[in-house]
Image 1: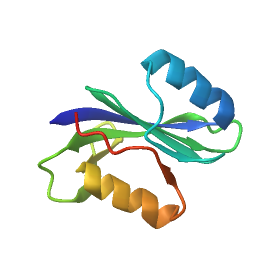
Image 2: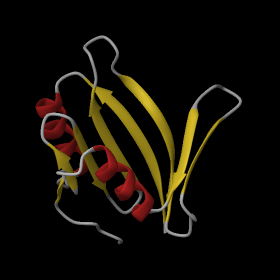
Image 3: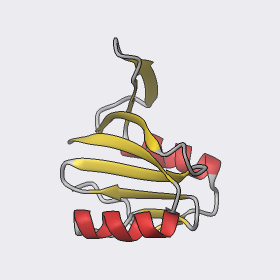
Length: 109
């Protein structure tokens, strides 16, 4: 399965979690309180990460692919960073940054 990945930098973490939970009608599958959250739906892999006020934006985009051999990143012709990863590679990256992340579920719909 493939999902579009969008990573967003947010200034207000708690408000963003509430907003995206409502928009996606889904709870995050990973939460690092005050820092990071990840949602997975049938078509979307959305992550948010706390950044300083004024620097909120799309951080990067990409594709979650069950068949991806690991994690890779490249820059497209427009200067946008694209990541390609499996769910397991993404989880390894998250737990490498935040070993105490609250993993609610790893949903492989």
